[in-house]
Amino acid sequence: IKKCNNFSCLYCKPIRLPSQEFDNLSLLPDPIPSKDNTDHYTKFYGTKSTEEHRPMYIQSQAKSESIPKNILIAEKIETILVVKIVKNIVVYTVTKL
Image (cartoon, rainbow, N blue to C red; front, side, top):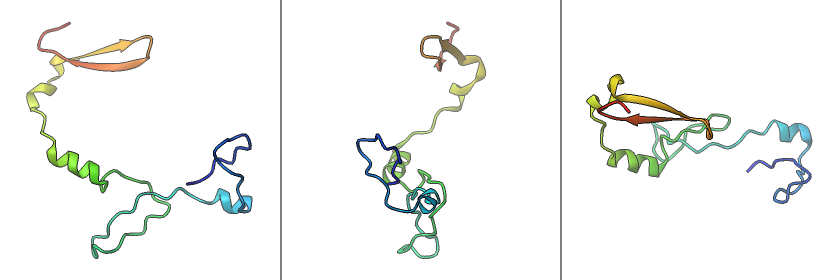
């Protein structure tokens, strides 16, 4: 875990590396299994992490059901803007609201 380098932080201790070395560190992403050899991983240092090989993601995708295509018709979708939260909410209805 990369430290925050904030002196007032209650959780991170001060860094002990030289500042140039610390600045060049990148976060360690989740390992991705190699396609050629299942016992090894592909090189993943410095790459972005994806959810593709996460065990819980794989299980949830296997259990999920596909969405019926007629539910995504543009006429049935209404967007409501909630002013206090400033967030879009999509409501699926057969009739207009």
